[in-house]
Length: 312
Image (cartoon, rainbow, N blue to C red; front, side, top):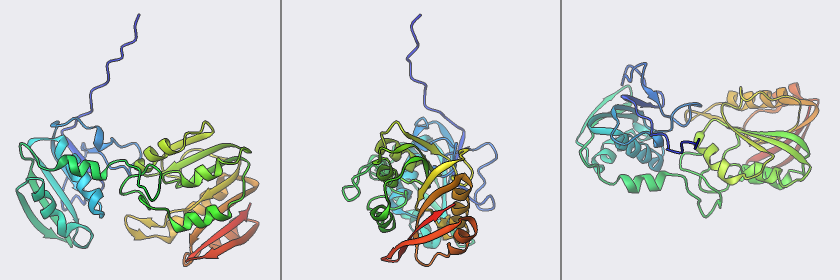
């Protein structure tokens, strides 16, 4: 009996939601299909069937290219005449929403509340400029980075100087390890250059970074996981962790986020395991490192960053 190779149809939904818009400003409803790449397990907006949704509520991201990409995807997924609501803080893209949606051929109603701009439009029969916005915001290989990446990912189009400093001083590692908050896989590629590494788990909360990492890191020793590195996957007894942890949560600096990554690294390492960490100079990780590790040695400090080697 032959295997049915007919591809599954793209998913559809009556209402889609992107991110976490305030219900007081734009109610998506409990049954709305979550499509944000920052929510592990959500449905990629890219996979929704064209002309399939009745309504879309989008908490717009701050980056212009990323935001227009999301708007274009939402318009593509909506049926002609379907309702699109897009909102953002005025100083983080909200002031540009009306012009962007007008550029797609929409007639826009705009209101303001609680420092947010809220734009409502009905999808025109033939939106304009969707292909250009989708091409600009999709998965691509920026020349300066020379790795697959996507707008919205951390340091998406150029090498991050903190990561570069870590890689400059990272020795060849061995055994099983992890890269928590792996981004597009730049640290992982350096780690896997050592033949003594037997396994490496890459974890990131951003699906776009994971999609890029799966293209960049073609190594059978690598396991690449879309999830919150502070919780998933189940890891223990690792020989090493190498990471450049995030310290922004929803666009706001959060020192607690980086501290949580340090704690997670300590939890998954075996006794005697090593953490290699790079951080901005002003971030106070020393107390957490000293409390959770038996030996902490600053390996290098330069250009506003510091690298630590910490032994459990």
